[in-house]
Amino acid sequence: EAGVVQSPRYKIIEKKQPVAFWCNPISGHNTLYWYRQNLGQGPELLIRYENEEAVDDSQLPKDRFSAERLKGVDSTLKIQPAELGDSAVYLCASSLAPTEAFFGQGTRLTVV
Amino acid sequence: AQSVTQLDSQVPVFEEAPVELRCNYSSSVSVYLFWYVQYPNQGLQLLLKYLSGSTLVESINGFEAEFNKSQTSFHLRKPSVHISDTAEYFCAVSAFGNEKLTFGTGTRLTIIP
Image 1 (tube, rainbow over the protein chains, first blue to last red):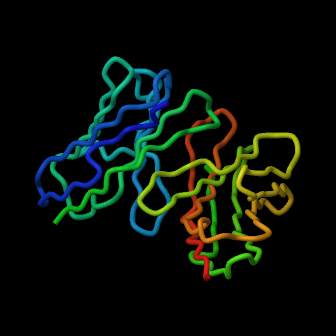
Image 2 (tube, each protein chain N blue to C red):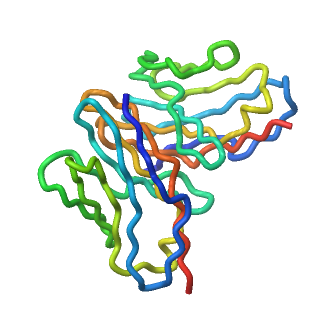
């Protein structure tokens, strides 16, 4: 069974440019999460979806970040425009049960 | 709100020696507790979890963790480490009824041959 798939694995962009990350969760998992992991820190939740609905986006910086989960499967996280402080690893996870989240390998974003 | 403290950012251990990675949490409600492992250039993998019942939980690769409610701790232990255990270990909590995971800052375990 395929795990959570994220792309791209690495992305380098100049500040003020837009960037998008894609996530394909494990088949059948209704819950999808986006986390951000800054260097030397643990992951922090940005947004959680139940099917198509964003049920927790309280930590998402809505002035520049947006996310969508069309048809309750794949999800895209976008930053526009990117800032130097957005450099981090962006992790996608999915779960079927509340107590077992499976993580993708992440996208390492470097803003220069 | 919940918080997690991992006091040790790095732990070097000789191969075949025992190790303990410390985790303390804070929460005003009951929580589930987790340990995740992140091998180099890989994503987070669930190592073990405490939901209820026996306070001692074990993983398939020899790690164990004990939930101590009075000390609000969930320390991770292994009696004999191997080179392959080199990784970063994250402790995490989630409140009952809330699927959000709150992570600690991680402990980098380095095994010395």
